[in-house]
Length: 353
Image (cartoon, rainbow, N blue to C red; front, side):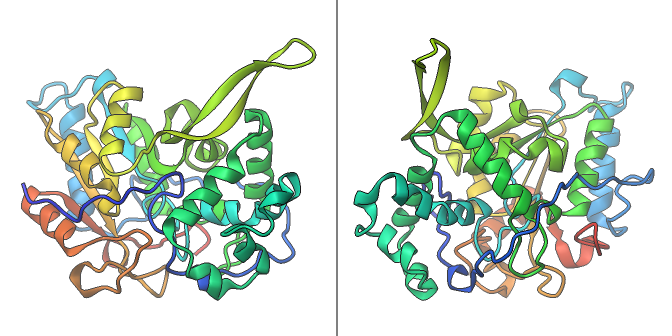
């Protein structure tokens, strides 16, 4: 089987998030918001255009749920896994969790003043977005890990919940939680209505995604697999046990780590897997290597008007955020994977359209 680009060794920051960093707008006056996953109508996949892609989904679900058919799959084996960034919601111009981490640097430096004159913290505190854009991936990884460390898991959850409820995307000026793709929300609901258990398998931080996954996608925290940091058990002064986060990665849930994480936390090979970049390649390969009916899909961002256009597959602009290489596209075509065209396959991208 043809292989794509070599995996990059990113930590909690996931893949390189340099492109678009210079375009990142400051949060400004943030308004509180209580966002719920958008509901869907009674028509299956109503935000999907008629065509091969929608039909492939319908045919697959029909085949695996027909007790009299040769491809029938028992309910307990109906596992569907989805990448998050770029697959379920917007990832441009920079990953949401990286934005969260960058905005937490002042609070981190307040706790640890010795970081004030150290790089990359000095650059972040300067507010110079062009200088920030030049930071190497390892520095962004360091920031993500450092801003999550030395807090109780409850404190980290509270900080994440507070931020995600108020932070807004610089392009649409809407909460990030409103930027989930409506067709994918419908797909998740359609699958669950047909006995599938849906999982998020993300290169982003597991604890970060678990905070809002139920609210946005209808996926409970125990069905979120992500890059996992270490925790430490201890007792407080009141004698009650608690967990604190540590600046150490236990699972880098990206590239081959996605297949490893699926085995570790689910214990079953998926029947359906969906991603959008080279970081999802091994998850789709692992899914497709199983026996029986399988469906592997990749979201291609080819709609600059309604969302973004980037690849560099098929001549789209290159991007270090959510890279969809030509080699990955070629493997998809050779292996019979379904490539979802955002421009051609989706009637609308967001619920608010």
